[in-house]
Length: 74
Image 1: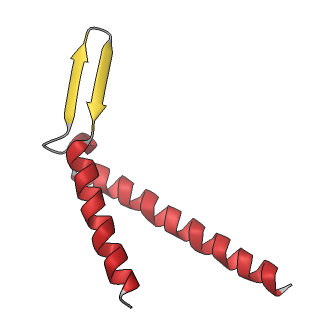
Image 2: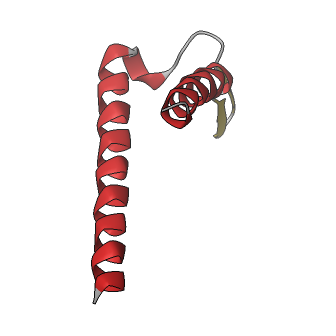
């Protein structure tokens, strides 16, 4: 029964992390209008539109790298 308890805690922790990530996306969407940063690429050709979140991806990569580095140094 100890293994099930540990697995349950792991699922709860994973759910809490997903909830925090979701909340951060909601808050980021309110701070940055439309969720698009300067440096994100978007273009439309007729009925086809394309959005490439280049600046957003770089920013998220930097933030996650900093958070994970702080987390692993504990």
